[in-house]
Length: 347
Image (cartoon, rainbow, N blue to C red; front, side, top):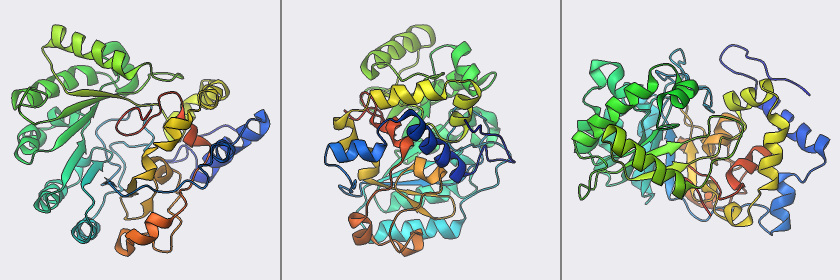
């Protein structure tokens, strides 16, 4: 089987990743993802609305996580410009899209991040920031982020692979757990996760290996119990998200010899209910350069939307609502078991 090798920043070209996924399906003679959708009368997959505009404001990050599908890191230079941000704001002003989901990299490292948040909030939209926690304590200029988030009523969603240092640091880097705990205390101190404040703090669990997440309900109960008893930390909800076989995580699967077995797990766990509720049906993903995608994972595979206007400056809501969503073998990750999305399980 073809192996993935790092070349500069890219572990493999998007085309090579797609080819590998397709070759595995053919070699194993298993149903393709399209076959599965056809069997439940969901192909072509169509939108149900545009409820979320998810915007990747850059790939620069203060961490280099092993499972990162963005391949983000400190040396990434791809950063959304203020001009492209303004084009996003123009689209929001002309539509009624209620939720803006800001991601990265570490989105806070974009020099125009705070201006962007303030302009979006002026339009009355709900803003989610996917904060990696350690950015809050990484540099004094970010120490006031909890207050900034509170001031603008931002929903904070943060990855915490596990409630102990060993598993967290193995996935995200030495010292990450300790810094994450510090950041969570700072968020709790300004009201995040606390009862009756309206300040929402959600955590994200990704498996630290070649397996699917367990029950989201059970994991949330465990996280809440341990984080409160051992660290005095509270939060609202836990999202259990399946690792999607693209980019850095795909490289890990191949290098560790787990690729075939992991894909078989995903295929065998295909859930029609989860397929009907995949996040690409009610969101549009915007890349750091303004290109439009059906979801964040298609963005990493360079699979732009199938409409004439594929840039935020050409945003056409009517055309996007009529499009056929692009699917491929990596989509099994979002439809296995209880399903997976940026907001956790879907079924």
